[in-house]
Image (cartoon, rainbow, N blue to C red; front, side, top):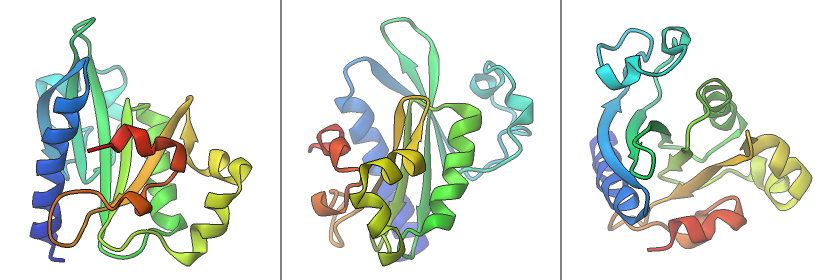
Length: 163
């Protein structure tokens, strides 16, 4: 799957995902920009944004419609199987920003390297939890922007991604 094809699937999926969330609306999608340097009024409203010297693949600004606050969803993507390196990178972003939602999307699913961590709840929590939230890993079906259900990790987050 090409970069542009995966990115197109992700953009379509972002819009569908936010529409399904009862209390959120999509405000902006920022692609591969250094968050500390971007000239975006919504990012500038976040405390400590100037220390966010990194560029997630997608930073999605969403608005909580119940309290009108702006929140963030982070997405990184990879064309290879997800390994500890990709998890470590986005988890660093998550610990700094504390996004409402965080996703790691792969065109190939996850690697054997992390399978052991995924079946052990204690390892899974240590590896993928931040501030009582979860990083969610998944892959798309090859022929559309629907998610391969069997690729969703952690298993407890599968209901979040129901089509």
